[in-house]
Length: 288
Image (tube, rainbow, N blue to C red; front, side, top):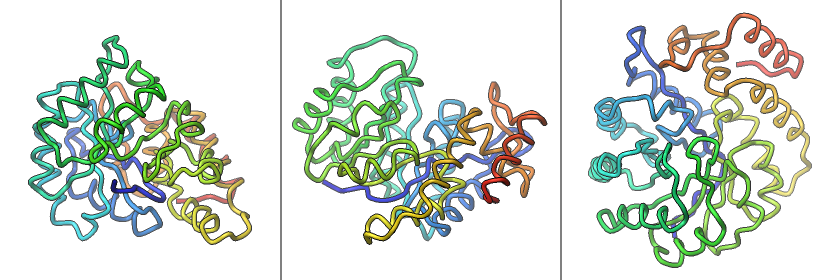
């Protein structure tokens, strides 16, 4: 298996004033947070407005992304309900040199473990060389992975199913699989997860906390005293009081107005929310 280790961000998608995907700024944002401390980023996760951005824009970004100097640090989220579109996007990604994918089962419909097994099976039969991170987020998909299904998928597809992003938090304390990446979806679970054998995190707020989260991670790896984890968790908690996408775009819009643009029904924070968030971050000594 190919382990995913360290601090990963579900990177933001930056839009222009016409609500089109700004390819250049989206890539620059991802490269910047890697330079600040992230081991890598996931494009088109839920934080990247994946369900709202068109397939053609995703393909356009991929074509430009392939020339990035940080190419090896990228994971591609599909963010598509259509099985056919998911496979098409993965094929294009593979042709451009991207082989790692974060894939959540389709939203809206009700289904069970066997149905989810069939979903991933169909993808793997068509693209057997893909490396897939399962995306466990019941709040968004309506489905929560069971431990049994994860074990079954890994046993059936040991070369393809390489990890799980656990944003429902029902797996990371229980799953024990050698060379398998367990990645909770919050900085508040980072240290506990590492203690339990998890390999890192994939989170929305590491867009902002990249440097801080990386220091906490490195202190754990090097067995140093943890002096920054409390601050890291408090910053995460400050953002969690709001829709994370709205809060992060509001935060970054202080320096770049393009971050104010979000696809409906998403919006940035109103003035009261914005002031409350920024004031809280200021009291924590945390700035952009």
